[in-house]
Image (cartoon, rainbow, N blue to C red; front, side, top):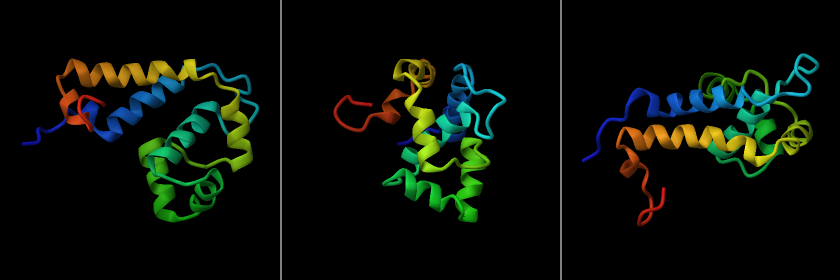
Length: 125
């Protein structure tokens, strides 16, 4: 029997929490680029969340109206940077700076006793 997830633990809720944490990461190019770091980070997350095989495929498919809608409504990304630009911006970010977003999501799920819903293989989440 599946139980209903709390609003904050739904996909939109978790993505919003991640976006807030990503927004706290300092952006050395703030105000100097059309693509803030938070949008690049969320684009990278969308690339994996929407299961694209490559950055190029992701950038090209963002021209599709349905994909653009999902990127905007779920990930808060209005315009997707090119694959080269995205790679360059994401290479600047240390993985340790992204851990806070994971910890916030994980602790929220754990605190509400919803961790079993995210178990996929013998105790792995």
